[in-house]
Length: 233
Ligand SMILES: [Zn+2]
Image (tube, rainbow, N blue to C red):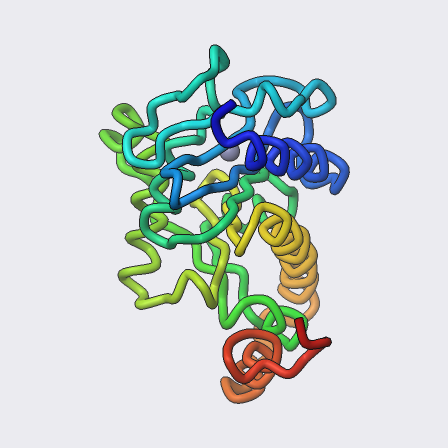
């Protein structure tokens, strides 16, 4: 079986995603990648999370998007995942319509970095994309969703390693990490942060931002070469 280990891992990750409460029905998906093999593995389209098995995870070519050794259709969002893997070289991607993050996406409003809880995971605001234009929606919509995410990061000179999430305008969040489970953890944190930002906008919409050096202190004590938070691995 192609990518047997990755299929097993991505299956477990999708079942875990269902347990987080971030997804309802068949919304959402998790994928993983093996760059050496040139394969991305993703949830099949429209299959209930409870019915997912390792065998029904769908491997696709990272280069072409062609389905490899499966009769099932991959998630309809697969072309979005592929564009993100090609551009960001991340290890796993999660897409949800989690409530608070989707509220911000629908308001076309970035998730603001207002404190150290945010800075522990994301170095600054989580951006929102521009809305897709009509031709981008009618033709290759899912691929264009990925391309507009990449465009958002390039235009703002954002590092996809340091800000590992985005809000797609009028749609919802995509979150990535070093592997599918890391991406799920970040998706959970993103939703928690979005709830806090929404609450803060209600009680103090003009509250001052944290200083940049405080944000960087918290981000870099957990990430990068000089990280010292937690235990050595
Ligand atoms: Zn979606």
